[in-house]
Image 1 (cartoon, rainbow, N blue to C red):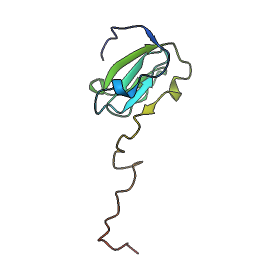
Image 2: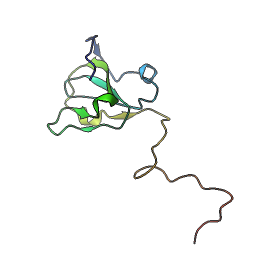
Image 3: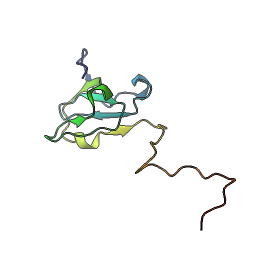
Length: 100
């Protein structure tokens, strides 16, 4: 995991324009640190943090401690939805008749 070099508190979530391409998730830990995620993170077992493979998370900004950290998970607007469970169905092929 990257170590923050700038500890100036971010008053709110970092702007998506600052996120690396393909890093479509952001979330804030209870201690106030914001991270970018390449894959959707999950709450850590011990609480207070979001977790993803270390190669899939990157420090984004420092903020104020947030007791509502579980509400901070955001997905980049317009990011492609991953296929599979929870994803949208594939688009209908106009040349294929509907199944009964």
